[in-house]
Length: 374
Image (cartoon, rainbow, N blue to C red; front, side):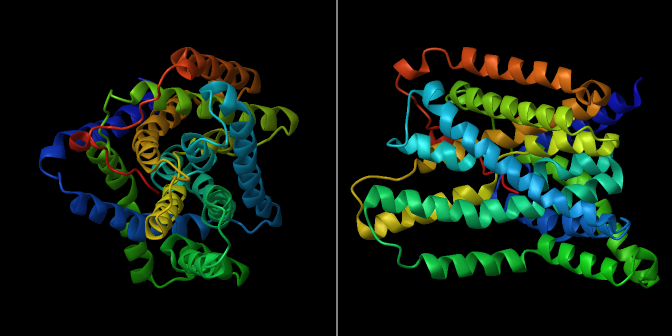
């Protein structure tokens, strides 16, 4: 059997085990506990180990900039394509919700584990550096964008925006993954690496790092709850997003040929990450403001944002696993163009006649999906 396919099957087995464990772990608090372990212990340890094994190269500083460009490119594509795709515009809460969610990336749960397994520690280190640009986009720029939309709709003023932004910056600085990246970069600049750490520390960090992949895959199996009530509408939007992300990757690889297969695959995989939790957090904050002020109309559709998040993680997992399993196919820009056009066409076909229908985004409360966040 092909080694890549064999590895993919072993990873899918862990997801399947997670699905089987659903009855044992149904509480949202238990799932949140697993997620905290992943994002606060396993993922930071894995990134720390990966970064300390990378040779310092100033050219790598371009990675956060490229990730930020990818965010803005998807934002621009969403702004100009979604009106024709959905029949909605900036005056509609659904449109504003999609505009905030679709350009965001959540590589922590949807992308990093597979990069670590298929591209190794170098690939994971590069991805972690790229995520710095994405974090700036989702935490700061999207918050400012959400508040701009809120005040446009509500015709209010910008009070409390500055204090909220300071809180977000503090949150960014306190996040374990970001702290680990900062510490690792400082150590690299001082000439330190994993071998300079005490043996007990190296071993402890290594054991924490080994937890990441199995825990993430089990979490995906536990958290995913596909409900067909609104699947068609959300899937059509996610297909469109994935197609434009492939188109973006193909264009970059075609005009800027990369010599490293790892970097090519990273350029393909990273933009396929699931939608980020942070835009949903901004949308929730705006909803709280609207309730407090008795707003007559909503800026965003909170339930729609929840449902897109819930289906985005399993969708991205399938796409990323497919790319990793057939790597030689997805490193050719011409093939990427074909895949991109195919996904965009499929999204339009699935969404046929949507603009003339009443869009039903809500999932019954009894079957509501859990959040799939970073």
